[in-house]
Length: 210
Image 1 (cartoon, one colour):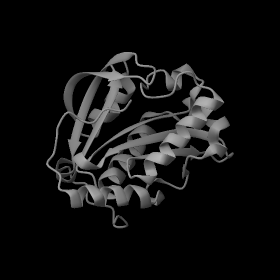
Image 2: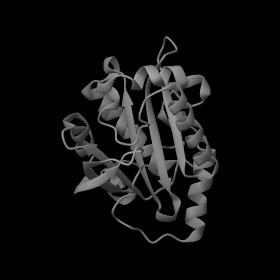
Image 3: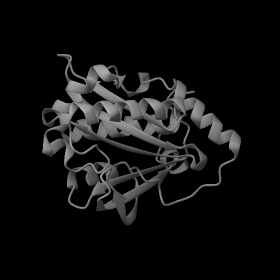
Image 4: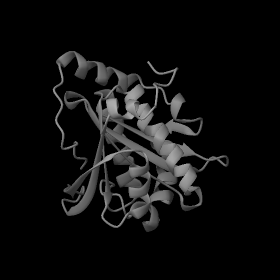
């Protein structure tokens, strides 16, 4: 289960509705040509990706167990969330047509906040690619989804993700208890960033953003 950031922003109904509309109509163009919305046709690819414990192990909100049935239900859940403006699930497709990664965005319009979780196949993991991809995703959330706050979490021992998050300028918010879909809990490190702080870091809105 995804958990909203600790910080609560004051959000008027018009802003919340604008965020819902942005989620429902979001284009993936700014994320890259390899990104598509996840559908039933990606079940086998996602099962293959997430069956690797090195990929799925550090992520708290994935279905357990990883099976075709659980992943199909997960995709359908994400599609339903998108129709109400509260979630997006995308997959990355490599040059051979295989699923090489995924990103799941959970949005709380009434808080103008969002969370991202995701992973990539081992052969697509390197420091430069991870930082660049994360920066695109964070910018997309601020520019396209129009949220004002992003929260992220990582397992206590997930050094790779922590480095990427902190390199992007996120503010550490300490530890928090995260709840897995099976009801078990995990201690996680958490970080937050506001859109104003993102902009203050010299990151202008993408010219193609809404």
